[in-house]
Length: 222
Image (cartoon, rainbow, N blue to C red; front, side, top):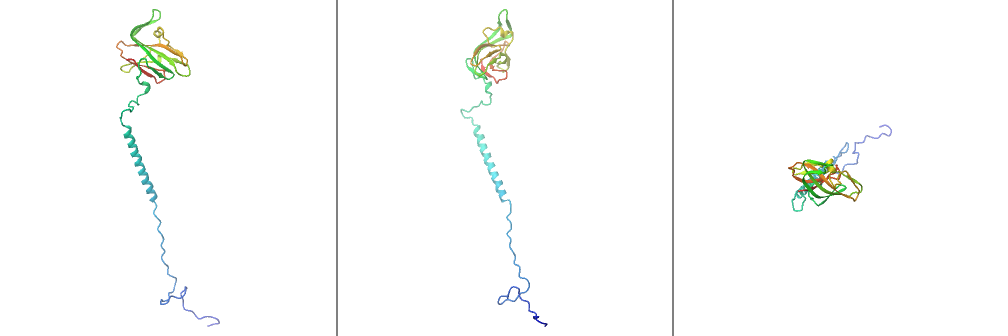
């Protein structure tokens, strides 16, 4: 050996002597397996959400079914005629006051089978027969409104509509203010509506309007 060289030493375990009774082991320390927790599968929350939506939809459908079944009850007091337009019903009759727009109306008298109206100077003969409907018109609005006899309709038993005569025949009517009369708020006028209809005409009602574009209200005349 040269100088300070040490004699070769036997290989020793790098981590100290082995326990008593065990043979020394050489080489790298044993590698122990490491357990890694497997990630939880996703989708559990999604499934819970889908189930909740399905249950909620079922409850909603059950509630709708209950409402529909209760709505079809024909118990006394239910309004079975709600689908009919209110302005087209002929619940009122002669002497009743009805309203349409800015006007209220009251039919006071009906004359049938009139062959001629007017006098020898201003008059007209009916093509079939004249029906005269006496009506009182009152302005219940806030502005002046013109009453047009041409906007009024006579209705027969077959629900056909007949226009009022606004020509010379209407001008020949005495005590009538139904021809192009402008009525101020709170005022009322009495007029006669003239209709030229067939001899076999079967009267049902008159439909009264505050203007040609209003919904109208019916008054039964039979």
